[in-house]
Image (cartoon, rainbow, N blue to C red; front, side):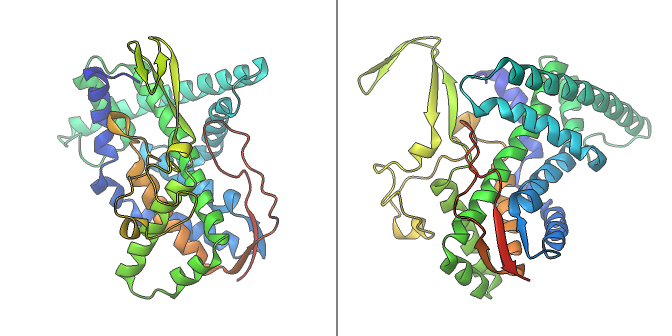
Length: 339
C-alpha cells in the first residue's frame, strides 16, 4: 500500500464502484443468489453452510461486480483460494509458494485477456456515440482510469483485480460464516430475529447484529504496515523498514475501547454509547473498499437462510477452524435443521 497521492488516484477508481449507491443496487442480485443457495440447502436435512452459502455467494457477487462470466467461477475460486492459502502460515513451504505463484500467473494471464476484450467493447461503445462511463463494470472503470491516468498502469490493474477477487471473497465468506455460527450458538437471537415482523425494525436489528459480530468475531485477524520513520510508542521502539502487524481481533476486544468486550451485546451502540467503533474493516485511508458490500451481503443472506431453515443446530461442536494467520473463520459449518 502507498500512503501518497498515487494511492489516492488508484483508490478513486475503486471508490466509484464500491459507493453506497452502487452497492445498494446489487441488493436484488444478492437476494437472488441467496435464494438459489437456499433452494439447494432445502433439498437436504443437513449441510455445510460454508460450502452451500458463505462461499458461493461472495465469489458470485464479486465476479459480477468485476464483470467476469459466471462460467469461470470454478477457476476463479481456485486462484483465489490458492493466493489466500499463502496467508495461512508464517513459514510457507517452497511447494506452497510455487502453487501460489502459479495461481497468480494464471490469474494475471486470464485478466489480461479480459481487459483486452473489454477495451474492444469500450471502443465499440464510443464508436456508437455512447457514454463509455455509463453502465460499466469495475474492470471497465479501471481501464478508463488507466487511459486518464498514466500512473495507473496495467500491472496495477492486474494486481488490484486479483486483490479484489481474494479480499472480496475470503473476507465476506468469513463474515457470513462467523455470523451464522455466532447466531446458532445464541438461539435466542435467532428467535428474536424471526419473531420481528416490522420490516424497519428487523432491518435495524440485523444491522446491529452484523456490526456486533464484526467486532466479536472479526473475519480478518490482522493488517500490516511498514514503518516509514523511527518512532517509539508505549515504551517500544520501532525502526524504519520494520513490518508491524496490527491485530484487529485483539483491538476489537480491547477492554479500554469496549465495555464487557468478551460478551456479545447486539445493542452495544445503544447500551454502551461511549464504546469505540470496531475496526474490522480497518481505518483511515486504507479502510476496506468493500465494507458496504460485505455488510450488505451478510445483512441479506444471514436472516434469509435463518428464516427458511428451522431448529438449526451444529452437527459437531468441535469446529474446523481455518489454520490461518490472516482470515478468521471455520472451514466447514455442518448443521442439521427442519425444513
